[in-house]
Image (tube, rainbow, N blue to C red; front, side, top):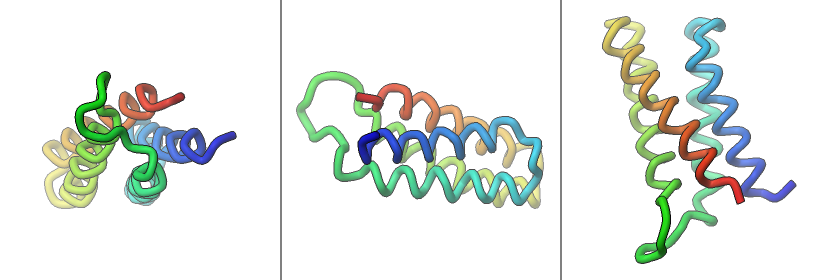
Length: 101
């Protein structure tokens, strides 16, 4: 398994933990950590500017940022926080699928 595949698997698994929502706040925080770790580990393999195709890493970064805002916000305001976390996790899953070699 290559480093990129492992990083995308980590990020995708973390996003699925957030999307499933069975593990409560601790699961959401662990999922957010996994998305952030997968995003950071996949950064060296990010597509450069001007390359054709989808920029999956920018999508992963946007999903990580939305989840990073949504997970803590869900502690205060459950509906908007959960919505942002869900959108961010969905973007991370899509990016992980697009980034697989």
